Amino acid sequence: MAFVPGRRFGAGARNGLDCDMAAKPDWDAEQYLRFEDERTRPSLDLLQRVRLAAPARCIDIGCGPGNSTELVAARFPQAEVSGLDSSPDMIEKARKRLPGLAFALADLDTWSAESRYDLIFANAVLQWLPDHAALFARLAAALKPGGVLAVQMPDNLAEPSHRAMAETAAEGPWAARLAGAAEARASIGSFSDYRRWLAAAGCASDLWRTTYVHALDGADAIVEWFKSTGLKPYLDPLPAEQRAGFIARYRERIAQAYPAEPDGKVLLRFPRLFIVATRAAA
Image (cartoon, rainbow, N blue to C red; front, side, top):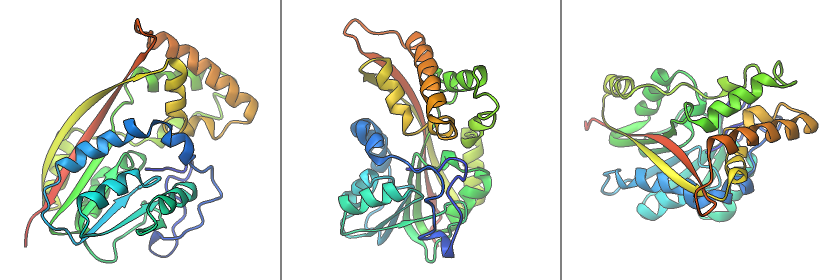
């Protein structure tokens, strides 16, 4: 998944594809992949719950550097698999990783499918988009009868890692500049919300929440983890000298909130919401 802070998914061109998205700070695919094993595990867990026998068309929206797309392609080798993302760097890395698949830049705020899919896979991306009632209805409409929308979203805004972001943003010389940074993430609905919205769109839904516990190498590792995701809306608007100061204060809070285990590791709790919605057969 990828997100361009300040613009959500960029300014749309024809069908949202191959748009100019370089004007805003891009994602750093290399930074994101520093924790590839941990970031890929939710994709694996989500994909295991997808019950499709022989899908013909699959798409990974918010595909990032292609690690989740690779799983979809391996699971359904007979399918036409493609990926969309807003980040030029992510798309470049995905194309190098999987040269046999089609990847394109896309504005998911405006993207609409030209034809329907058997599987729409959305791992850790929809939390950046607003109005989930309308969004999930639009994605469900892009499914073939019997098709599946498989979604995973971080549900960690109440965790110390994210409370520390908002607290640090409010206390320093950057407070005015970062007043709206927390709004980059959409509010996650309840189980009832998603079940109701998807039922109205003609889909049966399977929903669950999993809290992953990642043993990382100290407070610095937690900071590095979030530099490529949750911290971006806070760091990208800042000049370099303020960015360093923000990270230093954020790290102090992280060190207090995540004490070291006897072996020196710190345990990062990471709750995630999973949704597998199946469109009614014709």
